[in-house]
Length: 369
Image (tube, rainbow, N blue to C red):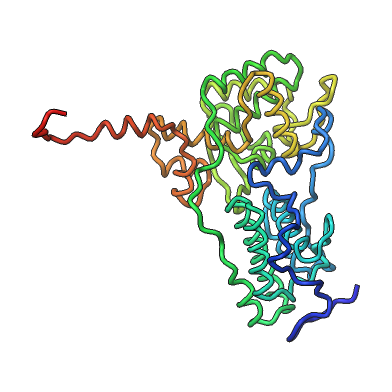
């Protein structure tokens, strides 16, 4: 494919620009209510957890160095690449149409401010959640920066095109906290399954709830990252490629020990696929497999549906409710800002009402009320 270097003016390869009138363009890959529903059409059989790992992780080659999208995705972590690829496909679809446009061949360097602003207008017209719109705009600004860094985009056009602003909104926090009784019901449902999958799923529940791990962090755990004698769990290359150490409590440590005895002492991934018939495959679980196994156990336990990230919210909520310092919880969860940790606090309104009752003011009302 012949590459065009943009020096000034418009690129001849740019397809018709997006306009605010293009509000009928669908955005199926970004669901404001539940981002996990982007996988709703995938196979959900027990054997599917040993299959492909979904969208491949972007790996940069010499041939990709002129593709701003490939360069942008390559610098993201595996957990972010899939979401941002869908976001970039949404922008390209709004500009050129089609079911699944090729973002590597799209001429990002030719986008102007009027077109990036129109993309924002299209997203808002679709009544997507502010967080969804902002995720798409973040991906758009990131790929524009890479186009500029690759000298495919004039500085003046880049400075104007990137000025598309995020949507400011004060929405209620997403997700929910899972109650202690629900967690016990989940573990009981796993214990009723006498196959290796029961022990494996119980261990997944334990590390997600007990350590507050992200889904990608849980599947990236290796056996050597755990010290079950002390409960130490090493999270290697978490979000932002930051390492940290967290801990498992005694009860949840026993749950993980049950799976380790079933799994065996061989080095490698902690959470492994289990095929029908109880055959354990020494291969890393996928993120979709974790989501499916939690959904299966929730259905078996009669627990209301929750997402893998709700496990992380529950960990933060439980620790804060027990009196843990917010800075300690921040370090356990790997947040860069304690304000993010506070947004994970899902304690019910009764806690706020009880806190308000702690305020005491001496006052004698002059009339009977």
